Length: 301
Image 1 (tube, rainbow, N blue to C red):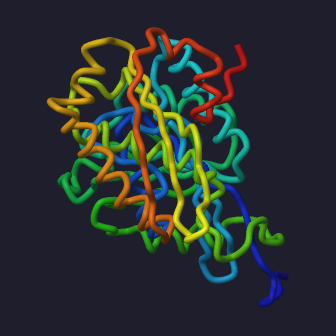
Image 2 (spheres, rainbow, N blue to C red):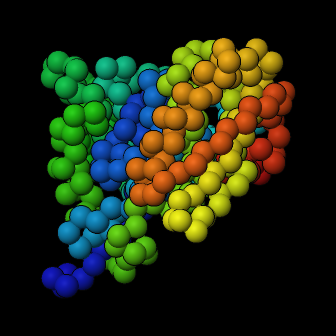
Image 3 (tube, rainbow, N blue to C red):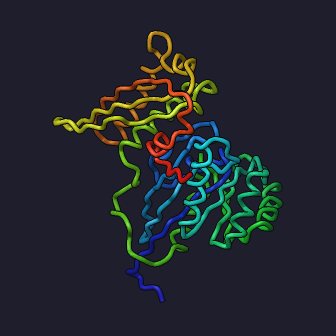
């Protein structure tokens, strides 16, 4: 019998096809900006941990890169990170864009989860944008591929259904001590968080032109005596024309990226931030082991 004073703690991996809304759901569940969000697919490149207290349960939410058919070394490392997150978790949530339905990518993920025979729940996202008569056939179709213990319908953008999902997770995780302090939000190092916030602004401000050919590395993260922090980051791009686009006329684009990223970082880190950005062309960075390790991916090839 469970003691009323006992605590629960466990890892919950969020997996799905690109653009299912995994990062939006993580940010909604934790109430904090932990994972970058953009309208483009494949913005998350590595595992992000969100730490959430729900009653006497510590829910450790793992946001993973979207699972897709990889081509580059970067792609392969991203997909490997996603499956590692799922394999290490106590429970896996398959997040599905209800509008897109059971696509080939979604079906492939569901089949692999079914073969693994690990605890998994089905979470349909964006259900506020879909007529209810389309949802039941989708649920039946996916449950034929994997024996999902539970099914939830949510809208990560509005928050509909998210509280019910969190209550379910709090009750389903195993009894055990908390693994992190109760007031922590993430295990993401500040250096990596800074690079991700800059990369998000690149996604938001350069549209289809640059994002997938760019990566960001924090070169220095220096605490200052006045309590502020000085951050120097380098943006690596694959092509010369991407560098020109990122810098913009008279440096206007990179200044705007820096200003927006600085404001977000000041809020997240709760202190003044001095952010300095440099743009360098580096063809083939997405095939370099050192670059992948620098952005938090463990390349095992």
